[in-house]
Amino acid sequence: MLPFRASSAVLLSVVLALPAFAQPKPADGVLVGPNGMTLYTFDKDTAGSGKSVCNGTCATNWPPFMAAEGDKPAGDFTIVTRDDGKKQWAAKGWPLYYWVKDTKPGDKTGDGVNGAWKTAKP
Image 1 (cartoon, rainbow, N blue to C red):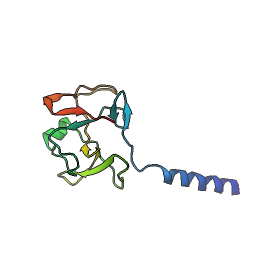
Image 2: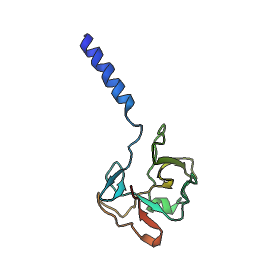
Image 3: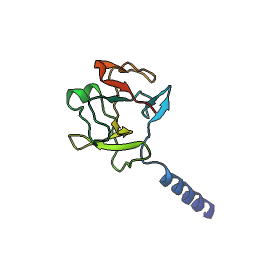
Image 4: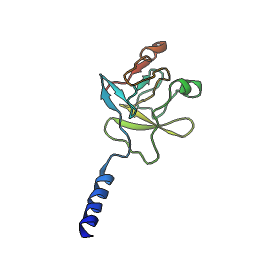
């Protein structure tokens, strides 16, 4: 039994050391979410303001990359508060969004939409 307990303790310490959120990662020159889908920034947001201006219908078309309860900022990744009080991830101060018309990982069809949406860069 002792080796099992020692292994359990080691496993628990490794799990506790893991980051609390699924951090965006670079892929093909852009940031992607944990699902591999491209992330975007919105020019009408203000970097570093701590909030998103994309709400309502905007957020239906551009779903926010949400932070889970207990997630903590790390490096270039911070958390902003949405109008509904929910939390959203930001990169270098810019809130991050998916685009509803991207259908598979690698799609970047939202880049340049309305001249205000850009792929999020690492």
